[in-house]
Image (tube, rainbow, N blue to C red):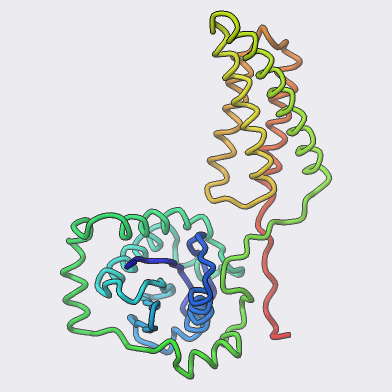
Length: 304
């Protein structure tokens, strides 16, 4: 199937990955191609602004401008013009979101991981929508490629293989794929998990009991049943967000927190003020723990 499988944004001077799409493919060919993309990203400064590394089934395309370069892994049958349209749009979006100073000062891999959202949207549009959506830039990119064709590489080039063996000239990052490791769980974080599980269990028990009672009668209490089940689900997702990285964590955290607050306010009468305050307090603690637990910074690769 002709499509874009992976995209990332890197800093040209040292190959430092700034952001990448978070979807994963686990077949061996793709993983090998990711390793070669990493090797190529570390030597982009040696090449012109556009290039393509062709393989049998997969190809790497890159487009660099100033401080940043956008790279993509596509199926070899995917249109080269469409691939560069995609990279150009991605580059515009990244340049509009971050200034050159913050890019220059970035010291850890995937410092702009939240840009994954924009990558996914653009990638989805190019993979699943008709080419008419990109017709405006298609002719422009086609003309540019005709006047200045991208440099042609082979994935098996000795230079890329040397880059893989040496881990790239910058040696800034170890892994090819983003490793979304979170900081260590704190005692307060463990407390928030325990309290969240307890609140979720209370909501589930009360919701099931009320549902049995309501369904046996006239369904009048269905609103209250929903108001118990929603906080239960919110508690589960709060635990998940604390333990695992997810894109748009802030938005999801605030949505879950306000859901718990609104549902508990709705349940006033079935719960007293102290119970409502307890549930909202636990949701507040969990939200704070989610927002303060950050991704763990990777240590530089010293080739050991």
